[in-house]
Image 1 (cartoon, rainbow, N blue to C red):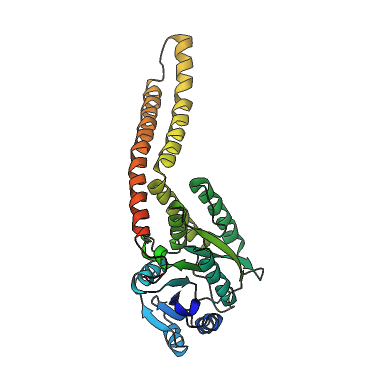
Image 2 (cartoon, rainbow, N blue to C red; image 1 turned 180 degrees about the horizontal axis):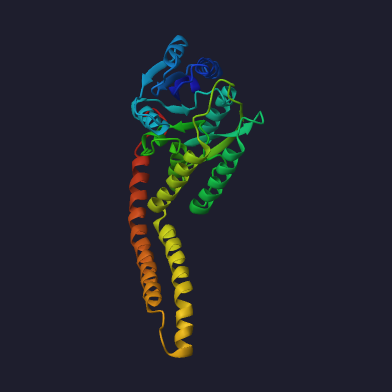
Length: 311
């Protein structure tokens, strides 16, 4: 069946001249008949020349950021199956056939490569801890979890790619993609895949703290958009606790003395409690809006063929 399908391997790149040739050759040899697209993101080294020498289809995206590149890729490329992989040589091409077979046999929309580190330095402690925290947060918010929320190795159906409203501009694009699939309850699985260490001369573009904050901010924003009742109820609970912590001592003092000696504190506590009620009502209203948006996205998703019109 794979021979009858148009399989596109899409590789976002920025200064990956040392590794991109091996990535192209590795994935082309792993599965027969695939097309490798390399999107250069304003590289200053020989990434473009190396990619062309290895017979990849090379295109440009000048807006810096992985999210910008992925959004352009998804818009430009027409295929039945999309394989997204980084160009740093850390992901295993030999796992691709298994991932594609799983997508086809289980009719999934998303198969994620769960990274199993092969070297001690391949997967930094900060990244591992952050990935685990984000996965647990996603489980709390959406009831399901991706073990490797930040993996850059994905096999996707056409239906998912063309219905994904990519908004993120940076490394948080993987988080946005996973949460999109989780919020619509799409069929998705994970496959263990070896994760190798980058070459010594090749430095990771991912900053543990800066990009971690951006990814966490993306989860908070998407939670507000996709689960507004949960978000605003949690906010209301925090405001209620703050109001009570300020107002209870004033109330006890009034019962003991008959006086309100800390009048500004009483007004502040009452105002914060009012904000808590407003937050709760806001969550209830926006939850209905979010439900309608999910229904629209689900209908847009269902209007597209799973792989192609011949499927």
